Amino acid sequence: MSQKTILIVEDEAAIRDMLKFTLTASGFWVEEADNAEQGMRLALEKNPDLILLDWMLPGISGVSMAQKMRQNEKTQALPIIMLTARGEEEAQVQGFEAGVDDYVVKPFSPRALVARVNALLRRQHGTQGASDGQQLIAGRMCLDLESHRFYVDGEELKLGPTEFKLVQFFISHPNRVFSRAQLLDQVWGLNVVVEERTVDVHIRRLRKLLEPIQIDHYIQTIRGAGYRFSVED
Ligand code: CA
Image (cartoon, rainbow, N blue to C red; front, side, top):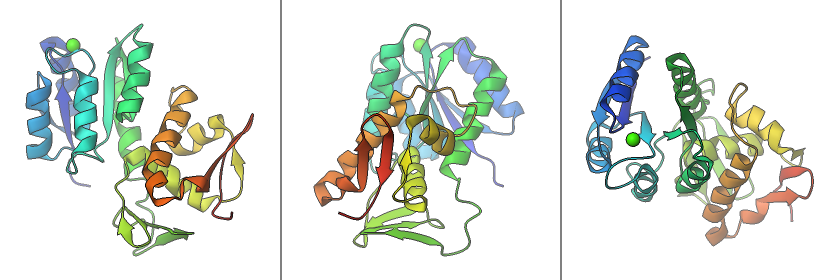
């Protein structure tokens, strides 16, 4: 497997150094930025596999940078882990709404951080076992597992890594109701400590993408139970 590049965007040099040391020791190549402008530039130039993004940055905040990245076609699907301080729960929710995939609360142990990085990279490349040319088709949707692309009526639609995994799970398990906890286990993976409302945030993002092409009804909310995917009317 080729070496993965992690971009760290963090203004505190001590945390940046610790992250760089830990990630380098785990076999990653590391790029660093101490502000969002530089971070955005490196994200475009260095084509990283994942970004560790601090929430509190001088100038443009981590959340604004995440939003900008989600609006840029080149960085739209880049996995982002946000670094937040304790007590910034509101930041975490805003972060998820801005398109962040996971977050880690400071102070964190280097090992836990590397585990989260690996989990997110696995989630993004969770389709490695798929045979060549394997496609999942449901209704007007087509998920190409080899090229990691998502199509509706043959037109490509860009999905973030978590939304891609969600669609993959739903298409593979149609017409069944899954609770938020089950979706967290199945899509986010065990040992990932995220709140159940995270599921709602990603479902909302996914529906927003599907709404203009009128297939948001494929993802149904079952009150008091969870969510169901069905292409039947
Ligand atoms: Ca900071």
